[in-house]
Image (cartoon, rainbow, N blue to C red; front, side, top):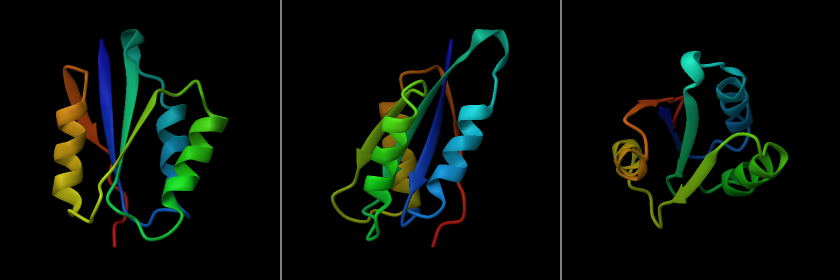
Length: 98
């Protein structure tokens, strides 16, 4: 079984690693796998490069990265994540979003 964790991101350059570290460190029961889906909602800072750096440094964490070509707001990011999920269930990990 697999659990998808949808992480909408907008201008999260300084905080995205904190969220991803917490997700990485969670141990799920019954050998359930984690699938992290990050949807960058057209961030204007260095969120994209920060995510790519994190993915490179943490290859053991299954992360899929998606980027909107313009800002579609949080709910569209959640829709993108749920539409691309390959699991039978998903949760949203939403931090502070300005």
